[in-house]
Length: 395
Image 1 (cartoon, one colour):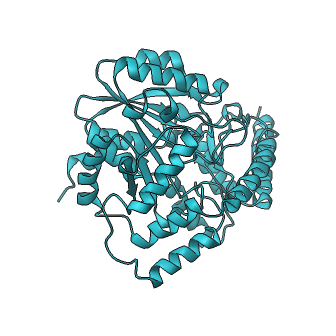
Image 2: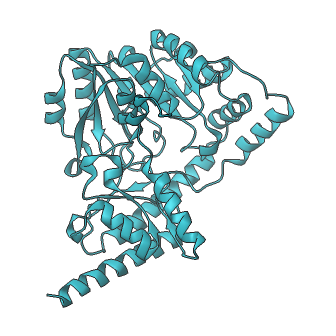
């Protein structure tokens, strides 16, 4: 018995495939430094954990409203309004179990066969999977290293057609750590209004920036009516396993989301929503401490990557990823990522795990200790230099 053909349009996530290979090596006694998984290596803040425990003790263990509890939706609306500078109503908020439902369900709600969806490349692979699953056509626009991995705006303008239904943004971005400049955000808003398409803005890393505060497309004039915003708790509050995200969108889309959610997931766990409420309304000092540590790791690790022959790495402005250009090594992305895992014991992702324009790059998550990051850079440099010496000896 074969699965339906639509399943073949979906693709797996490279990080989990590499993690599986790394675990197999560890089972054979190898030591591997894990820089492949995109999750903070910090504990969930203590007051958030306590709120979750309290919710369990108080009986928050039953079905909740499909779109989320009203007080939680109101708190999210207030937070988004304060951080994006635009009034948001609780009725424009959907609470979901993790970020991915907020990718899949809005795409299913909007995209029909024949529609085109413009998306960044390299980018999170679930975007293209969702578009293909809905019967749409992904139209990839390269992110430009020289522009700190923002769009090639000329190619973006040229890609817009009467069939363009949606444009996907991710800023700060996975895998590049790039932040879209304010001027580009303003131009994207103008294009959306002129050509009448929606914008899906993945802002899951909205609190994770270092130098230039990212501007949300939601803040642009006339864009609230045509923007779907994704944010959540996994990255900011180190709550990946809690599975808690949310979306902000026009009320007409909320109605469609409610149908998809009730059929797909019923609701988000009640006790998890109580923990999320404590996170968003409680002490933000743990977030600030985590970001200060990430700032120092970024400085340390990017500096060491730039000392490796054949590597060239821009300083990322957001998230917790380094995305070095490795074309100077003479290796392709997949070969180098594979050999670093097998021969150097460093797990990273090939840039091509995020799209064809990721060729020539690797993604490292610096959500690991400073000691492990330094050791990983040392191993990579030793391996690269040994390979270069071997090639010279064969000439």
